[in-house]
Image (cartoon, rainbow, N blue to C red):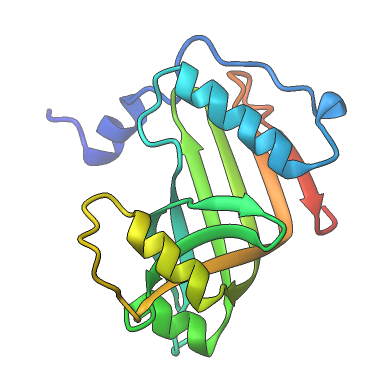
Length: 174
């Protein structure tokens, strides 16, 4: 008898044998500081593209829409990503300026989720980001926009083999 797809999925490993530990009691007050630390640990563990994240927006039909983007920066304006204003996500953000980022580092058994309102950064910031992209040819792109997710909630999640995963939230009540 052949295995079912469900059985095949169930047989896949969840997390690596060695997982880092995380004590929420020792977490810094600034979630960006903890994120940078986890990103550094993901890099040291050989995680490819640890700055890649799923970015979810809401469409006009109130259905979620998600795609992968690259985190550009974290500063006082928020957690920054970029896209064309005319793209699907650009149109969705224009109509409903809220979004969610999700970072996942399988080698560490870690996720970080950032949820909040989304603001457009200045035309100058967007032009600078466009010019700094790999392969930039010196031409401008007036449709390019840097967006900042202004966190209402940030959740750090650490896997545990006993399934008592650790969640540490900043912002919204648990």
